[in-house]
Length: 401
Image (cartoon, rainbow, N blue to C red; front, side, top):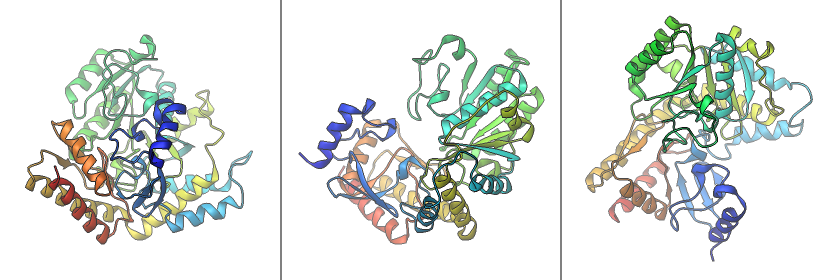
């Protein structure tokens, strides 16, 4: 047996679901790597020593590249001073101040570890602040928040009926709405007049540009009805703009969540927004985590923000991602393969009506040393030579289908 196969058996036997992150479990065996042993820059290596040019990037958090030197140095320096203390560390203050200076809606912030729990925190704040119970949710907001019929159990699969493990009474307070569906949102505000606490929205990557009107519509209807507007910027923050869609579309929410990208893979999330809403944490709406102010991740975040501001990372991700996926689409068209990357170059989604051909393309990509995903991310360490090599490998992959 290969080392990949041996470790896969251990994962399947001892880890529920085969991975602690559902979307990371290998499903396209034998081509897909079952485990990653090492990552550097834009490349990763599996247990058998196979190298891949990586566009999964830990499903989004790695925006600068694996083992990015300045970020690693910041982590090492802080490691010598301690990881977490019994009182706030100085980096909690410094990172909070920095985030409030770059995120338009952020008057106060609070740190957690994952995006999903930070969205749950915002929902709790919204209910406490408004005294209302009902929540409208658009897009996937993390597993904690998959509560209503029609919600996304994960970014790919939709729940039918009350989600398993969720009480019917709680499920009935959450309403899932599709991206850009203004009519349904207006209907819900009419049906639950005076009872909707908030609208929580994560962007649709394939149809991102529709957000220019849709986010403005949401801002207007929530203000009109006394509800809060919460932006899930887990993917869009530090990717389509430093401060995400609120900066890109110039629409300021009441609360926002950032996670992936802000610490180049270190576990860190932040929920932030209006001071009067955030202050509900001190008025009975308790949200607290022992590891919220963990210093290594905050050190990484400060280094990441500094690099973004000095080196204009956003433009790099946009321009080079746009070029890469445009060329990949050309390869797919030329080979007659019914697949297309749609959306912005920083976070395009592979669109198709034929899941089977997508799986076949992914298998061939793995066989040619390119690791892709439904949403494939370029990072700052993908240089021109890496992109050219990617195109050569994917051309071979497409030719073999």
